[in-house]
Image 1 (tube, rainbow, N blue to C red):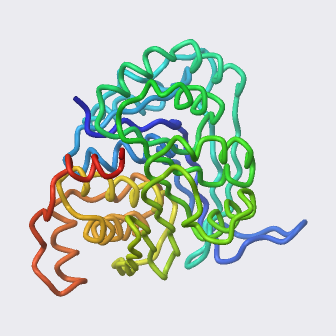
Image 2 (image 1 turned 90 degrees about the vertical axis):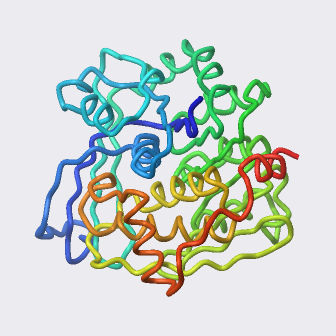
Length: 323
């Protein structure tokens, strides 16, 4: 059985690091450029594998998946690839303009969005089979109509985690349709505000469906709501600030893996913050992902305490999430 099955995408990221974002009709010098492996689904799967979890990915892999050595990369990282669906069109590309201590600007290119959707729906039964062979199914930026059809039927028996990301603004209706069917919902503060507007609620506590909510606040850390409690988690300081691309994905992976290892929600939040701190130390979402041993050392250094032993069990946390 897999620990984590990540639904999303495999993407070639083109990361451009700048000192300032360009205005309309303005040319800005790029300080650094890097071609890296990305895609929210793959980012989560690789991050979880680095932390010692058995992870897999469910996504459409384009015709250039092998030519770019992405397949060898996932094989090397130990990611289960049974859920990768071959296609005769190119993988998506993202162009990420990154400024230090700031949010990213992202341009996204799909070679064949309709073809991607067709491939996913043709492999619905594979998604159900792999999903039910996993402890946690994590859904990130991808094809939300497919996600909705998959989740609405109640055919997945695993814990469902959802991080809608920028799709909260691009496809808001599709995002709010999925929320009632998930157990853990991740978002940043901008997305949280938009979701409250869409659902016409004043507090995130009014969201129906997910038992656990996590709101990332960038340099201010994160807030986790679970079982009536509010946990405020500080952002762990990285050794250097280079590129925030993928920090949210590694945070989600760190949190899920920590829960699977038997840590309580507060400690899992701290571990997730520690994992995310590594991601922003290099260009690219998967470039500087840590092992569990590295996480332990940085956790102890930042929080000034010995790394704790698991305080509960995954089975207990799972029951609380599914109840």
